[in-house]
Image 1: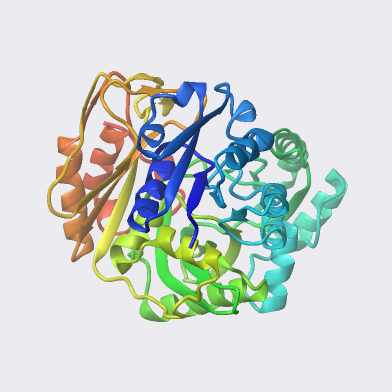
Image 2: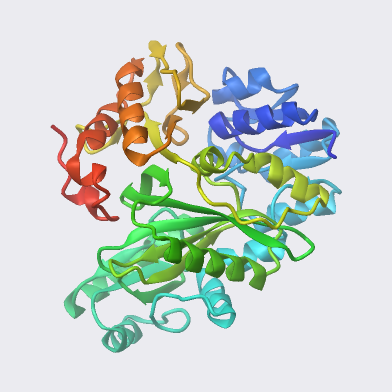
Length: 445
């Protein structure tokens, strides 16, 4: 087992990793930018090293600074959390070159799943359903028009190195395609330094359902059921739950088997997530693989009674997984509490938290790095924390969440709490009647 793990991240995920490491008897090292010197992950780690100025490029994305911190503190492993360098194959390689274990999959696995075209080709060979579309990257607007005629409108243009909705455009008819192609290509280049674009059939009225998987170096793979992430705004998730209200036992079995095939096709060794689009007829299509821990991993932990961070660390040491597939027990819902104004198009609201009272009680879990006096920085993601409600049934979980949100007090910054309160009362949401387009017609009262 590792003696000392450096956490190359910040905020609530860094604090989450610290907690599991402490339970496992592993020392932790926090890294932080000057903007994060008062963050809880810095206070709770055994050691802390400042790695640069507030900008991510000067700190949490600065590989030389992170490696220097690992060297001077004698870390024998690095946990990347999510975001930043979590899916950076070069970073994983550099860790290996310095005899420091990267807690995650191999560089080749990250690379193979990070490029969407390569991942799609791998899934086709493995027999995993994929969204119909063109083959390979588009080279011109004219080629895009030709492929769109073959696939049939509506289509969606996607960045091959993309994520978070960047470099993505839906096109409903031919006269829109030139502008969409040029815009997606430019955005992809600016966001990922890779302007490669490909095309798929646009799946209408889809649900976004993902399967949590774990694999080890011995070829074993298991799944830990599904999460429904369909409540999202501009491809950014706001609410996640398990099990999905859209799921059936047959669909869970088929999606679970497909997810294991996907992970097995690359010999995957770590925890990860296979993301699918599911149409209204319950046909499902591979969308992408996230080769890291997800923000919403807590939802799965609560319905499987399984510590995913601990499993991730154990796999990295060479331990075998149990090989058991997990069925969800009860129901869990997670709301992301962001420093954003839902009454003003979710505009970011950085600043100092003047008052903070977090809810508690039976069935409530809070994962947060915030406290009264903490400053939400404009340099990073605006998430204050995550609240997870757990109960025997979905209805009970929604009622527990609604109660807890009414107790959640944050003053000094605008937050998404009012949005979540209204969502929990929405009849369509309560009945499970929603898809990824749900928020396009949702109005704040």
